[in-house]
Image 1 (spheres, rainbow, N blue to C red):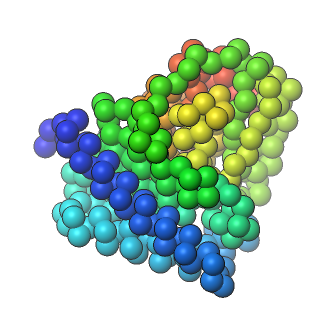
Image 2 (cartoon, helix red, strand yellow; image 1 turned 60 degrees about the vertical axis):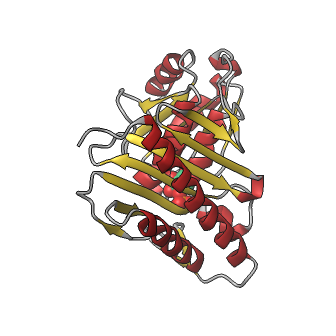
Image 3 (cartoon, rainbow, N blue to C red; image 1 turned 90 degrees about the vertical axis):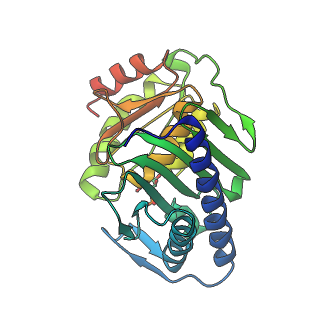
Length: 267
Ligand code: IPD
């Protein structure tokens, strides 16, 4: 099957945005009631009843409109993985922020082909009042306004976001890289939601972002939003970001110097 046209991607983006809005508003509503919190991969990896409830409504909303598409989602929904179009969903990206009621969690809905080409994506971050959406070849928008990345500062004046995984050994490695990076840039921000970090690159709220070991649902929507705003978002060694890899996002003029620094620091 040929890849969807830009017009079809725009339709997918509309559906991604309506699904992400629905998810984020349910999450916001559930946050005002007592949460059931438990753990997943490690004692620091949290999941709540809201993550599961949001995933259920987001998946149902998408499948009501496109019953033959595939689904990959953080809390375990998965079907139709051999379908030509697959939806990649993080119902609440930044669950730790959500549990602590710290602003900066989002519902993230990406769409890709079975081969992995990103087609559309939406990230809704209600505590910051931000709705991001992108369609392949059609650009990215924040709250309806088209995004276009400004030229970046030199690396030593760049504000560089990053994040840390849940596994203690991985965190220790990430901290070692970070200790070496920090003296060579302006400063850092650790938002706690990878999708929001990627959207922050898209709007110039940070100059760059890198992280090791993300899952596909952390990456999908935010990657396309940042790319469609003009950012280069790739693996450290080139090629499309992949689950478990080392993603680097920045203006194309800043990307090579940042990658060089991250390599020297052992990312
Ligand atoms: C996490 C967030 C965090 C990143 C972690 C992710 P979750 O996703 O995106 O910023 O540093 O690597 O796992 O668990 O909150 O959906």
